[in-house]
Image (cartoon, rainbow, N blue to C red; front, side):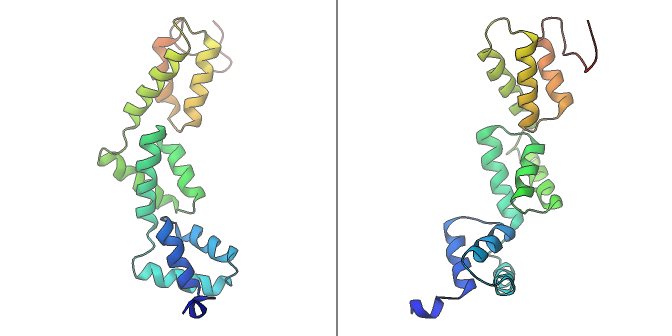
Length: 168
């Protein structure tokens, strides 16, 4: 029986999907690494997608729910991660919007928690450079610059981060 499935990309794809939800692109890449020709892998993936076993939107929603909640990542970072996994930009955007609408993802709440956590770690009187590092870290985490600036503003010694090129 094992001999029958030896070079079957559909069988390999089902095994891969039983271990972890994968995007269409991730599954194609893994089948290629297993030596399946691209056209056979594509046919197998198409067949499984038609059967409902491959769903990039479902994978994207799961990713947003787990990474957004656990790591407190902002929407732009989550969108970038999804696109790197091969999720189309419109599907990634939809997954994030639905997560926000469903209350699974709350960027404002998560940003507030991250600001508090990071500012407390700086000590009672953080200096401008330390707060600038927090600002940059929050941008890398995917939060919007205006929201980060507003959340950090009360913590700056002279109320507010400077704009590039601005002097006091």
